[in-house]
Every structure is written in C-alpha cells, then in structure tokens.
Length: 320
Image (cartoon, rainbow, N blue to C red; front, side, top):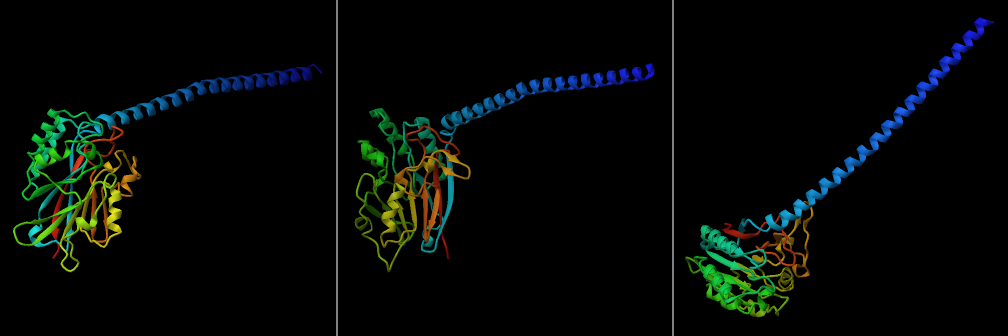
C-alpha cells in the first residue's frame, strides 16, 4: 500500500514538473513576442525614413541637378524627296530657352559654344526666348543679342514666336539683331550649292495668333513638291496641317518640354493642352517626321527629371 502511494506521489510530481515546464515555455514565447514587436516597429520606421530621404534626394536632384547640364540630341533624318545637294546638311534646333527661369548667362554662353562646335548649316529657334514675367533690363537684352549673334550657320538662322514671346516687347529686336529671320505665317526658299531648293515655313503660336496656312504655303505646288520644313511652337498647331492638303516632310516644335519630369514606362508628367498629343521627343506620321524639343528652361515648376536641358541636331540624308 505504501509502495502504491509512493508511486502516485512520484506521478503527481512528474505532472507538476511538466506543467511548470510548459508554463515556462509559454512565458518564454510571450517574452519573444514582446521583443519582436519593437523590432518590427523599428524596421517599419527605418523603411519610412529611407523612403523620405530618397524622395527628398530626388526632388533636390530634379530642382538643382536635372535643370543643368545641357545635352545635344542627334537625329538622322532621311527623305526620298530631299535633293542630293542638301544631303548631309546639319540643322540645329533650339527651343524654349526660357531665359531667367533656370537658365542664366552661363547657360546661354554654353549653348552658343556648343552650337558653334557643331558647325551647323541652318539654325532654327521655335519660340519662348524669355521666361514668363521675367524682369528684363537693357543689360539683359544686350547680353542676349551679343551672345546669340555669335551663333553661326552656313545657310541661315530662322525663328518663330512662342506664346511667351508676344509678351516680351523686345523679342523681335533681339531676334533680328542676332541675325535670325522671323517667319510668321511666312516661308523662305533655301538654296545650297545648286539651283535645287527646299522650303522652310514658320507658323505663329496658335495660342496667340491666327495660323494662316494659305499665306504660309503660297509657294506650294503639288506637281513640283519640294522638301518642306515647318517650324511651329505648340503641338496643337499640327492639327492645322492635318486638316490641310499640304504635305510636309519635317516638323520642328517645342513648348511641351517633353513633360519636364519624365518617369520610366510612363513618359512626361506635366501635360499642357497646347501640346495636344505631342509631348514626346519624336513622332512619325506617314512621310512626316516630327520632333518636339525638350528645351532648356522651365515654366511653372522649376524641375526636370530624366529630361536634361537640350537642343537637337538633325543630319539630313537624301535617299536614292
């Protein structure tokens, strides 16, 4: 009997020990959970801090890094209608300088130097010389004339009005005194080396002035069509050409700044109705090649991301 009682006591003792062990394990698990919660909280906090730092860095880059560092975008433009005497000529396309936005005197000097290194045959400017509401002094206008006059082209320099240029009273004087010919619903017949010619047509800002294609294309002849370049500012002006019977080979424009802030797989972020659907750098519509410059300056927002200030260089090539 005593032996049986001893056995039962031992069993009770074993059970108590097992219960105590289980309670200790549960306490350990609770302690681990308590420790893991602060660790997870710290990880989330650190991740948020990292994201904030990255966002701030990107904004600072877009404001101070993305708006500086002028680049040249080069394109080869081939055409069956281009005559051989123009094959190989170089056209420099400048747009939306927007002086006094994020563009200062040193940027203008850099532009002039970079253009002259390329030794272009033709230079075209497709509008918006000065930033909107920029306070321009006589010293500023004299500076622009002095620098822009230094840009050399073998054949000629052409310009059109952008929407901001109508509010800059000295625009015409600055441009013409710098050696540019303004084409405003006008054309110029260009000769080079031989009697074969091509045409450059300049259209005004369709946001500010009436586009008169009848006047601008007075030269046009369906039976003897020649290579034709059209200068315009806003993308929406292309609709006038779409609705007409005129065939053009090359359209050069600006205004959109290609969206200013460009995101991978999405494109330009900042849209403008005046761009219509033309905010990307280039398009092809039938025989027509369209290039919209990203420009140099900024408009409402002084930011550029994945979209450096630039001007374009086109090398024309006659297709046999």
